Image (tube, rainbow, N blue to C red; front, side, top):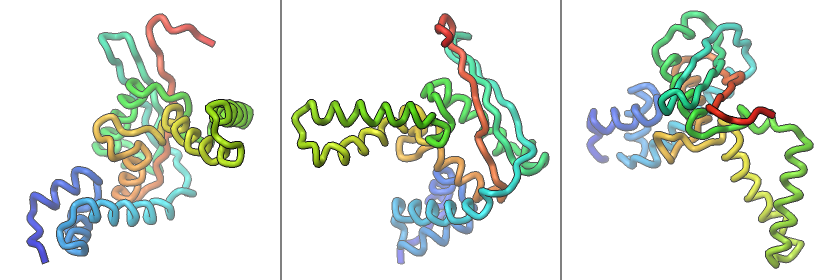
Length: 201
């Protein structure tokens, strides 16, 4: 078995937000394989988080972020179960990271569930038509269009976006890791992004 150093554990802890002891166990389980250990922690974290998803979130915070010398501004509301967690440094840091992500990534929705059905159907039709237009057979057009719609989700949905600080993580990975670590249900409820000179709908 590979020697598991404190530095290795710290590195994984920084990446996943999982407790120190869980990181150490995961590394031991896979003989020090960094990527496999992270995968194990993600699976465990999602399982822990899933148990908390239905719980009420009456507390939380509204966080602001101003970017590019006052050219872009974001307000985001993030909910949790208790006031104690709402004041927790890691919860507050997560809220700030999410606000920065919104400023940089310019998502339109929190998650795919928020996309109006009419817009999604139209997007799928356009993508399928583009695939057929490019000369692909109609019988595989649906499959290719499904792959394209995943890219669409990554562009317009905050939780599906790739994290600006780590291309191996999505915002939902950060959220699930925080839920697993803190032990409460946490939700990104809504956000608004302002850009100087932007035309309003």
